Image (cartoon, rainbow, N blue to C red; front, side, top):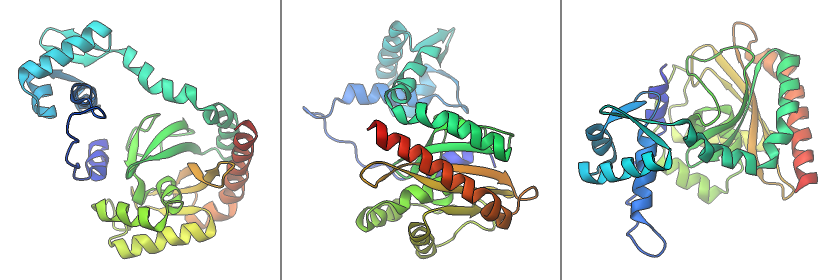
Length: 272
């Protein structure tokens, strides 16, 4: 499975953009759209390609690109534009403002070392999970995952733990927006079955995904809970099933995962 496929699968039909006004600055929104046009699949683009990708005129795209270049967020190499390293400031501003990840990292490192497996933390953003911390023990997926990577919440262990904390009304709204894509032969096919599995996660307090996102990959996730009892993030451990089948994940990994998630939650609650 390619990373592009994962990105396509999590895309839902966009809502109609708000009308320009006191609460919506259209030019700023267009600037963000231009930044988001660059990706692993399109790291360098011409002015025409950026304009087409964002639905802008060439003149409009040019003004935005030149502004970003002046600010240092974009570089121009001949006819090609590319993001500069300064763009990382925008993402790391979020990470540095959240004390949770400073608290979680050493505990996640210990867990990954003890199990010799990859360990990740993610938050919910719309119908996606966004990775905010990752300790890779080995490459277990064909997708290159790192901080900022997105995957569909509905067929990942991290995502189902986060979806399980949503109210019924919000969960139904999210299910309505989803387009279920069969990544593997084991991927859940119907929204009724997906709803049932999310409710099961809510009841048991953890989630096991067995080869729904990628053949041969299993993962376990547990919630990270704030002082008000809300799941604000999820922690997971992933492995190849030929190394650790799902039954072994539950017996060997789950107790340590739950312990680490609870420890991170306690630290967060003490700091907040």
